[in-house]
Image (cartoon, rainbow, N blue to C red; front, side):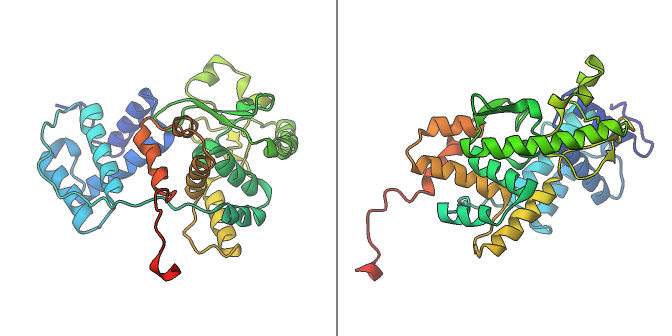
Length: 323
């Protein structure tokens, strides 16, 4: 039987504690907690310790039938509940029972042409424009880009060091030569912001894991500052101190969407579209697919292989309309 208490909020505290003990990403912790709350509310606030496989099956079926969620969304909910029962409540649910699975459509990623990328980036300026250029020029995920720290930039070797990316993996990818000078000047502006924060008695930045306890000065060290800081200081709810986080991903998402409209691009463009375009354009130019896999940080080559289907290679027939 689980030892998790029954008082309000205790379950979520326990989930958060286990997430951090296992060094899960902050975004994963947030997502798991959201799904667990939805699961509890679906079952009219009953404690999950009183529920089991049948209730999990009912919830997952509800997501597919009533909510009509995507297969990836249903899998996300399933992963959160597996984590809850196995890691937090320490219960073995050998069988969740049969549940209706959301259908997973076979969709190819949206990819921009090189001309569309040029048009998009030509109307993007400032910090958002620089983040967008890194998404396309380095193949970064949005979270990887906005959480870059000064120490992660290697101008001499033209590399970016990505730490604790998806799957808690580290990797290296390219820093485009064309961005070296703009990024260097951008860092000059960021350092002025940091110096102003220090003069005001602030200048702290959140540090990963327990590093802040190991080094009492690292949080104000220039090397640990975010490359793309937020425009304002906010309170760190964990430490209670005033700090400057990285720019919000929603800020970049909105800027990319607005730029796509301004550039007259009719495709559905997101930040991840630029990463898709990075991979596809590298393959188009003759780059080895395993090199692209390494740059993207894919564990499985099959994930990278999807971009070969976007290239339309092998279509050596002409449309009858063109004859």
